[in-house]
Amino acid sequence: MATFDVCINPQKINEVTIGNYPRKIDEYLAMGKPVVATKTLAMERFKDYTYLCSSAAEYAIALDKALTETDAASAAIRRQFAQTHSWKNNVDHLLSLIESTLTNRFHEL
Image (cartoon, rainbow, N blue to C red):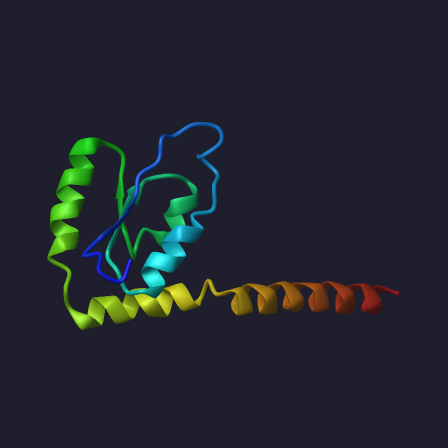
């Protein structure tokens, strides 16, 4: 992946893929790579950092645009966003939710 100019994640939309969490996108963004992917509900959270496509024609246009994104600033923004999806951040968020729930229940007693 280090030598890729653009990373892609094409998917056939069906009942299995429509809700898949796109972990590979996190990996691509963590490397600062421009990403072109199929537009799904799960991909909506990535819309500001990727090119989302619904057709082959959109893919062709997005790939052309993504190939021009060679600046360090865009790569840094993608890496920074990917860090918000790290395992550490996910675990910290879950622990915070558990702690909040337990605290609220304790105060209700």
